[in-house]
Image 1 (cartoon, rainbow, N blue to C red):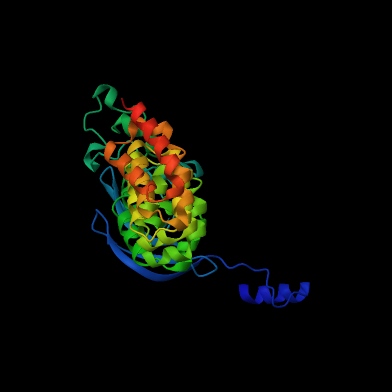
Image 2 (image 1 turned 120 degrees about the vertical axis):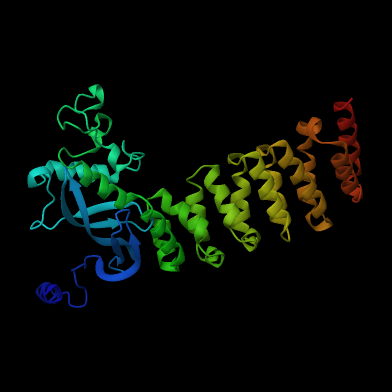
Amino acid sequence: MFFGFSILLSLMLGTVGMSLFIPAPSEDNELAFQYMTGDSVLLDVNKYYNPEGILEGYRSHIITPVCEDRTCYDVELDFYWDVLGNFMRFDVDPKNPLTKLDHVPFTSGDYEKLRGILAKTNPSFVYLKRNQLVIDDPEHGNNVDGVSSATVSSVKEDMVEGAIYTCYTLWQIANKTIKFKIKQHTRNHLDVALVRKMLKSAKVDQHYFVIENMDGAMYENFIPEIIRLASQYNGFFITRVMKHMPQDMFQRREVVVFLVGKMNALALQDQVFLLSKINETDNNVWVLHALVANIHDMGTMARNQAIALVCDQTQASNLEAFKDMVSLLNDYFDEIPPLLFSKIISTGNNYPTLERTMKKINRDYQKANR
């Protein structure tokens, strides 16, 4: 019916071949996995897709028993999660509404409150067992909610009055171990299209998930996007990129120049880690210049490691990087150990054009360390 309407609309507007109709996300019950709830209810968790056919999230039709004040009944609704198992929303059939005690239907306000409860990652009852939600003795002082009688007052804010077990049961289904199952399924089905979609997402958790879980071979396809994202984050995100990126990415000029340029955002141990990864590659002249240009942003240990790396890689063809580095050393003579300084002098002495320069820094170093 919708397809026919789309063609008709296109004909009316003279835009055949450019349908204005955008289909809704697919919910064609493609099974992802089955999940057993804490109440031993087996759920089918299905994938659903966006109009481009890329995984959008997961959906499950929930039918679960709930007992309120010794009365048991089935609750029926649809749950939706994003690709990382974060609860997104629920839908209820208007013909089969949720009810409270005495079969009183949920109001619009009750549904809104339930949505807020299910969206919480740490509600007040998160560490309580079902039998701890109420107390048997209404004379139990401040622990009793005077409105809902035996409901423990500390959880009242996260409960719909008259439906405490409904809220508790549905939150357990929406937020407990199913989240890990969903993440695992998404991890096992990351493809290029899904990675691209997640990197373009505005959600921080999706960015971290992708860089920590995508196949190393995929990094080659997404270097510009990863650099763009990393430039917006602090050093922790950049570190996660470095530690999950395959070694051959450290051969890429744009990658190394970017990472070295962010050296001042990295913790000292992460600066050292970056330099160790760079040292494992066949360094080019631009690597040495990038290190020297950012030497002021390094901690002492990383700086000394960079100095040693430049010395090891210095040749007549890239002597300018070494000369630039030597010109900056006066600020760090008190931090350069004697063995490393001997390496600097030994490297410079290989090149007659640097003889005067090496004699000068040798004198300055000895003076600074008297």
